[in-house]
Length: 364
Image (cartoon, rainbow, N blue to C red):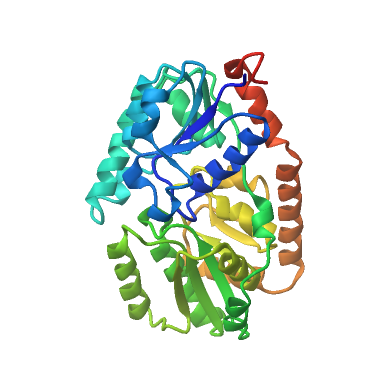
């Protein structure tokens, strides 16, 4: 009989990158013939998704020695401590933990959980037989903390979801001739949305007044930051017609925003992978990004990177990428090649090979 392969996550919700990957991996593990569940604290599972995930407290008494548990390590959580105490076979997939200083003035609870996550990450060195990270940037962090032989496995994404039909109402609403500058990601301080607004202000004022900045991403838990951004937009003279914060959206609406985007602008200062960069490639949107964290690694020679936040220069480059000219064509060609390299990798087979020693001869 094949062993079960379960996943521990700090939380399970709509639109979250780790939740999405956990769903992809659960389908994969079940297709291999393994029992597979997503497990978290009940209070951290969105109520309408509790039929899709299992309470960690209910799982622990039934945990078998032959079970394989994969921990998605991303923030401080009780599941991290439970994972350490389990008698089963263990694997870790590290998604990085955002430095807490970004949140100290805006959400002390989140800052506390990030600090806790750093301590738990240090304590878990040696706890698992298999250590993985979704970028070399993240793998190097684990190695520095004493983890051995850390394997790099890029995020396993559901690219087919990105190719489903876009929401027609959103397409119509934003089909007004404006140049659309898009950023997708949580409304979080490390994303430096204030820098996006500043760069867009220069673009809107001096390059193309028929333009709009769109942010798509949840601001749950970072409402103070969101209000600060709204105040900044007003101070910069950016009205509701030129700045749109969409919040958390469905896949169909997200696809529509990508469809309408002319340029994807990323000013984030801390990224362990940055899925929206790959999403932009899939939607053929040129990427302009600050070279921080794993961003250069994820772009892998594509897009346009900058290493200094000179807002006037960023604004000018937005204009050049938005124009249907040779630079835009060359950038999109590079991005298509990068996406093709990602899609050519059989990440399912790579993961299966990494897990093989834990699964044993009957589980392969």
